[in-house]
Length: 189
Image (cartoon, rainbow, N blue to C red; front, top):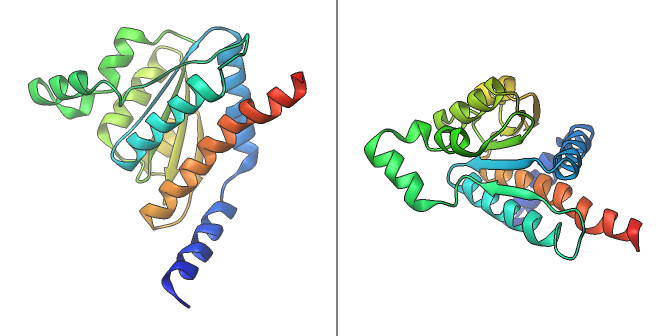
């Protein structure tokens, strides 16, 4: 088998591991946050940071444009000056939790993305969010790491390969985003 075929097969196996029941619960929480005017925060590191930024863009534009009900969503990964100031002056472990201390309110929704589930800055964000009464979602891989048990709702892609975990996380984000872009739009047409 050639490498692209092998990767495709293993990616399809990873996608099969996505618990769509839990993804539906996340969609319900996103709908509730939107309808109640709550803010959604999303964060991650490396490829997961890119997924967080991509997802926030999808929700701000694709799932909100020309709609009466709009998402208030912020990728905590997107303020480079804030990230580097905390990293340089304090510690990287608090770059997300400190932003939440400025912006998050009880009832808001925080989604953390981490393939390992063990990134200290992501864990601190979820711990803080839980402590003030936010709803918390984790997208994890492998064994779920610490994030899997900290998040109130965790979708775990239980495969060892980080690339396929990240691919599956993007697919989960597209499942959420395109629910609002396609399904809800069709329901109002």
